[in-house]
Length: 190
Image 1 (spheres, rainbow, N blue to C red):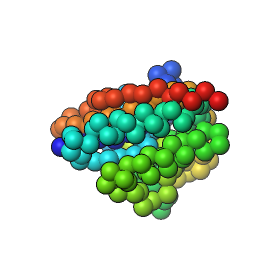
Image 2: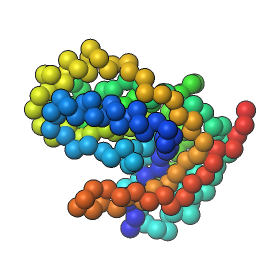
Image 3: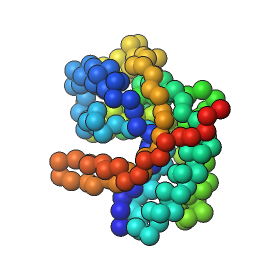
Image 4: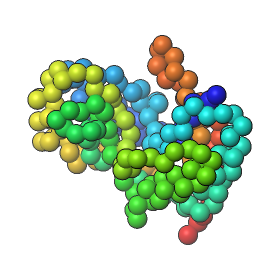
């Protein structure tokens, strides 16, 4: 079994801006597990434990998805939390694209992968990069003020999305290690 997910990779030029934001938030003293900037990506579909026999079918779906999608720009803008500010568990950086392109990619993958037996997501899809997983409410009031007053609409920059990647995730004691198994370039030039 392979632990798999499908994602869009961020432009490396944005890493410095993301890292500066993360360092700014870390100074608030949140009790959180921080995602290394090198591991940040925009997950389109988490597949979880997957039998290796499905990998070729998944690659074909990614090829099909790339044929109907043109490269596009996405803005990394605004920070927020899941599930809500009263009991935050995940701190995220928002991602938006014109005409809901990211949500359309997600919907396409959901539909095609459900035919292979992957369950449909039961939560509303919100494109984002996970910055941290919040472990406890330590300094939460200070963080709530920071979130609302300073960074609600903060713009880090834009990233050109040109491909879709199938990743394997290995969970180690030192953290998750992601390996790209397959990359496909978006081909539909409008």
